[in-house]
Each structure stands twice: as C-alpha cells, then as structure tokens.
Image (cartoon, rainbow, N blue to C red; front, side, top):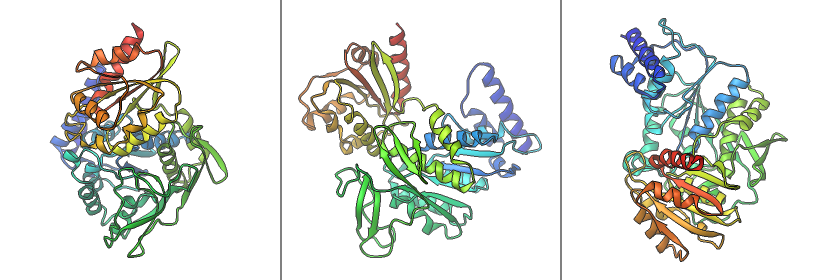
Length: 438
C-alpha cells in the first residue's frame, strides 16, 4: 500500500501541475491510501522541523535557503502547507518507488497541532521552536493545552531541541524531553528592551511550580530574561545569542559578524538567530545564512512593500495579539503621514474568536501622522468599535465591501498600510495589485 500511496501522490501532484495548481490534496490522497506511509520512507539526511506560533514560514524558508547556499538539495514546504497533508505532499513527490527520499536535507514548517503526527512518523534530527503565544483559540484551544500536546509528543525524542531561550513557554519543552539535546538561542538586552510591559503576556507563571516569573527585562510580550520566584526555572544560558545594532536598519551581530535581517522588527531578528542556531548545529557556514537573509523572498503579507503613485504601500498579515503588536511597532516607527486599512475576518482559518483585537495596541496607530483609518472585513464593525473604545477621534471609514475599502485606501495621497487577517490577506493583495495596475 505504501508504494501505491507514493504513486497516487505523485500522479495527482503531476496532474495538478498541468493545470498550474498546487496544494496539499495529493498528500491527502496518499494518507488515505496508507495513513503511515511516512514511516516507510528511507531518509538518509537531516530532518529539521520548525514550529511555533509566529515566524514558522520565514524561519523554515531561511533555513532551507541557507542549506541550498551550502550546495545541498533541500525538500521544503516553502508555501506554508504545514499540515500533515501538505508535508506528505512535499515528501512523497520527492520519493522514489523504492521509498528512498532524494534530498541532502529536509526542512519542514509544521503547524503546532500537527507536531504529534510528524514526530510519530519521521525520525527528526532537530526541532526548532520559535515561540508560543495565544493564537486561534477556537481551533488550537488554550496555549497550555497546545504545549501539553507537544510535550507528550516529544517525551521519547532523542534529537536536538533548538529552542528560543527567551520564551519560558518554549524553554519548558526541555523538561518534557529528557533524552533530547538542546541548543538555546536568543537576543541580549538592547535599546528597546523594557523593564515592565503592558503587552499581552502569557509567560507570567512558572511551568514547574506555578509561582510568578520575575523578569530582568522584556523584549516583547513575554519574551525576555526571566527567573522563577519559587524554584530554579529561569532563562538558560544561550548557546547562540545575538546583539542588536540597530532595529530600524535591521542590523544585528553574532560572533562579531554583522547581519541584516530581511524585514523590520525585533521578532524578525529572532527568526534569523534561530537560523544561525541551526547553522551552528549542522556546521553550515554563517555566510550561507547571511546570503539567505539577503535573498529570501518574503512571504506575501509579511511587511510586503509596493510603490504606488510615489508612495510606499506596505501589506501585513496579523493573526494574534503578539504578531499584531509587532506590526504596530513597525508602523509606529514610520513618522510620515499615513492612511491605514485594516481588514478583520472571522472565518475558521482566521479564528472565529476576535476578542484578541482588545489585546492588540491599536492605540499606536492613533497618532497625528495617521490621516485616516479604513476598516473592512466580516467583522468590520467590531474593528471600528475597537478604535472607538480606544479613544480614536480621527477620520474613519467603514466598508462592508472589500473592493470599496481598497479603492478608498488607494485614493489617499500618503504612505499606505494594509493590515489583513489570514483569509483576507490574498483577497486584499489581489485587489491592491489589480487596482494599482488599472
């Protein structure tokens, strides 16, 4: 059945390519034929998984590009098909009928809820965890439940955990995997670090004893240097630690070498440091990582920049409070006159619970440089109400029709920002591109 599964996956993927389509349907077919087909594969190269709430796609793609610059043939689910069906598609389409996978390295972005399945069916050499935040509570449930599910999946894991040492929710994974080796990464205190924070913060209590965590400083949200007030749980010694040079210029340093992150924001530097931790683990020259940072194609809607009528137009995806707050900080750093479109949807892939907008500091947009805020999406009135409760008194327009909202944005003679939730991102992007060409 495993050979038939491989054949069916390859054939369906080939037929989809003929009509210029992709997606995870071939892997879905393969798994229906043989649910444990991945266990039968002959893999003779490192398997690296990347998971976490934010930064999975960018981090996994940069690791893959780094490996390619090191002259390795890499299998990577580059477009973010991070569920078991998409991962199966990526692997089986690169597998021979003898079940041998043709690669020098396998780098897979994995949705957090799919970690148990992948860990059970593949021998994993490195599990990279970027961070854990509340995200899509209706699908992923509370963060504690999600972390416990991952902890159960790694209790016998004997590979290397590559962990964000500044996130207590990530550091705790080592307790659940006593056989695993660890590689901790993080960033030293910098000019934007804070002694106190008002941001939504999940890392308040010790995962070992339940006492409050005390912080020497915060980088953002609950990311920082911490120690428990009741036991010895604390920020571990970092194996790979970066030093920020200049956040607006995206510059940081590691081992006395300067790097430039592909996007703005401290969170992007954390993604880069995770990549360097993998480079260190697999003896990949840092120059290969540097090339990956420089040449990576930024995924759609990740601080994606266009030019329209001599103005910048920046498109960003938001899906949870922490990621949204980092976008707010990047916009806040721009002191030019700006018009902002926010599209809030509540479909299943967005998360039907939109209460997270009250944990996001949209107040950072309520400044004199903001000339107008435009809201749209299935929950546009909730978004408008959020600004009203936040004290916004400037000009605001509400559009139920998405095309009308995009047209209104493009009429503005300022810097333009478009912020969209998951299901709104591609429709907004397509409308922007279409109208800018018109």
